[in-house]
Image 1 (spheres, rainbow, N blue to C red):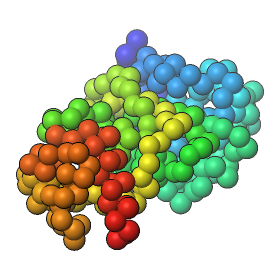
Image 2: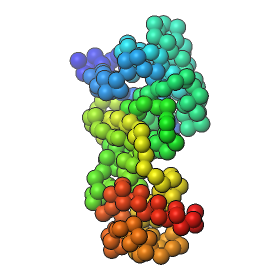
Image 3: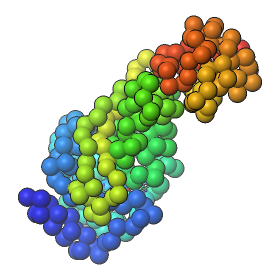
Image 4: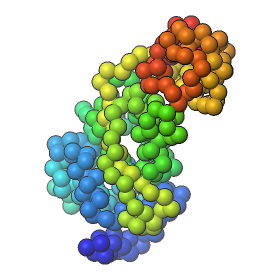
Length: 279
Ligand code: SAM
């Protein structure tokens, strides 16, 4: 089973004379059981799907057979053009694509109505890509993001308060969305094998996001975690204000450190900071 899967991806790569390029973060998934698990987790039925980086198209093919309404793929490497053109010609499900850098594309403009994103993301763009969607003002047009990312990045997004991984990324993601872990993926499921473990995560937006503004939240969180070994009294002082009184006004002990604060604590701090009108 494992060998067959491997062969079918290998065959696509050989037939199209493709070898993985490091600069595009190309580690192709060959394990169809894992690919099916990703597709199931994305709940694709009757949805408009945007796939980032279809590459050789194994995940795309299984998505196209899963009852989706449509798929729009964005791929930066134009050597996949023949494969994508073939998929467009042969697919019974509505399929279109764009050769472009996902970080320069406005996803909302590609699709009328709501959409879900599915991607085995290249490691080097996963964090900026996720942040750009999570930071959008409500109501957002994306319904869910089902993504394969480096395990270390997933662990930071999922991290609990008081843990070593709990940081800026954890509080931003957990403030604005619901995040769940689907499964880990071993390096042997990819060609070529990456040096690290991967994790599939699913993110859904929160309909109601607690104030404050994203700018003040980010400023407070960056100051607090920028000096994570220091107490809030010291770290919040980096904002050019009296860190101790900011913490006290928010009802938080100024002797605590960033990793001891809940997402709600950060919201309270940022709201008070915002009201000081020094942004
Ligand atoms: N979907 C395939 C799979 O699961 O095997 C390929 C995944 S591979 C990890 C990442 C894919 O994203 C590659 O096809 C790569 O060329 C593409 N890619 C890299 N950077 C990109 C960018 N900035 N915008 C769009 N696609 C990108």
